[in-house]
Image 1 (cartoon, rainbow, N blue to C red):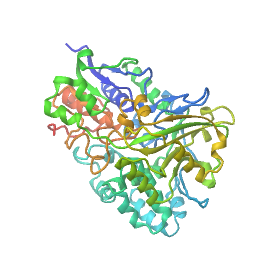
Image 2: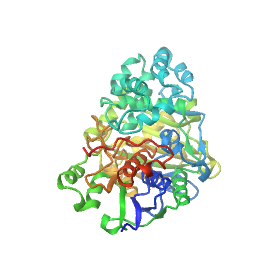
Image 3: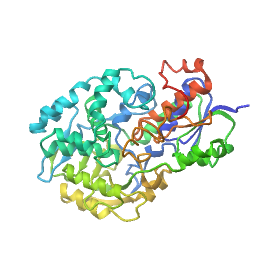
Image 4: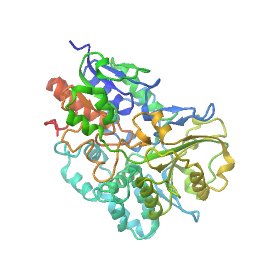
Length: 493
């Protein structure tokens, strides 16, 4: 006899979203989290000094504010207030100028010079269509018919291209560099398929929903999901590591917000050897080398638009960005790293004491790398913000092993939930029509190792929960999910 209807292991954004989706269907749900707090990659802590609140992993959430799963939940009622910087993204150049990704596509195009018209043509078919496009893009590629097949096909024709190929549409380095920086969020070489789609999706998100972050830090988003789950009757037990599903209460379904190799370990003999071996061989990508700074003042950017941007990309040209990404992919630390920078305290004073600031920065290094990228990263920052070093009060340096220690899903420092090269961004953890299911009908994978992959959007957990609802709990429970459309739930591939 099942003690609860469903158990979720892991209280990151995907695990919490899975639990909420199940609880909204009227099921009794229990969540187990090894850490002392919920959040996984959406935790906020005082990593440097008291009063300086740093995001442990994720910081800026274009796919969060635009997530179909999150948009269906009353997160604002549970404490989420989105902070929208005047400029979502700035991409500076050594001469003191900058390209920008603005809320307006026209404003973005205006700073791209001769490439402005090309940018308009690239993005225009999808403007005003986020609500139609996002549900189809943020799901498994083989999960049934799309809502708008023609719109998705038009997007897919552009999105399937490698960023390096898509960049050839532009004539100048400003647009090429901006596009390459957006694609670099995939943590894959720019020649990999679908990296152009990553760039296009992030650009469209800026124009449609923005690149905001929760006031107070990413923890607010995790706390809101947890509070909503409790309001639906769900239970969360933190500080409770799980070594085997056999340790958990009897349940009709188990949803695991873990990496595939952890799935194999937790499920044990519930899974056939062949399937478990494939999970153990799951491939991970490059790692993040992250530094959190406590600063005595705002970053002294040479390019003025950077002072109004929530996110800044440091790496001016597609050549420099591509070289940095390729080095990390090939097993070497980049000499000149490409950096993704977030500066939330410019727009949210709750993040640091008066007059002080926090800065969130990461670059790409090989998975499991044990070196120190601090010097190279700070030289790159000084290149665009001379005098930055004089403002550093304290830094918290996290190489790949520390990144993993903070969140066990970041194996070897891989924050993308697995390799994103070739077609691994689209088909993960294996090429399967229902990637959330396993050969055991009661066990499901709901982490970022399933589509649509990395990012704080909760869609991996949401889709996995919908599959479990349909397979385990029946059609009558599925209909209770406020009309949600379930993915195709055919045989496991």
